[in-house]
Length: 116
Length: 115
Image 1 (cartoon, rainbow over the protein chains, first blue to last red):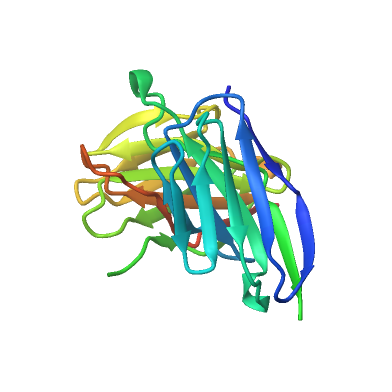
Image 2: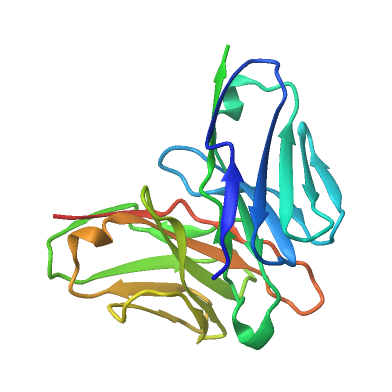
């Protein structure tokens, strides 16, 4: 089945620093999504990407859909303490035979710690 | 616009019991998906419902089932609970309209503990 490798697993940075994380897949995805999850809460959608090569920003966050459709990265600039949390990438494949309806494949998550 | 609402937030059950979790999607969203989140396995897809029909299913045993009502609200049921079923159960809703890019929005989840 499809596998997503997300790296790094964790990051410890100083407030104000930039940070990047990425996901690679063994299969092609049609959609890449990036979520942030805080303790005791559900994942919150940050950015959605729908086209290979697409670069999209949401405030200090920028994400790109890789040209090969097998990878994506998320970049956070000028980090602040409230950026702390777990960041997940998720991909949705082509819906051949209905196999992708509602199904997101998630990476293992990147735990981000920001020191003031 | 209200987000995805899951009830209850927390639940403690005993092995062998069954449990029903509820999810109300964002108004107008017709697709509801369910996920299990555990520290060891991460987020795993359980199943998806659209217009009261299950369109897709993940690799979980038959003890896990679900349904969707005409108002798009969904429930999932786990029978004969096992200790390993302890997890955060998440529901996601999406618009799922042809020709429109749709994103999945998650609820806060139901934390199930099986003792």
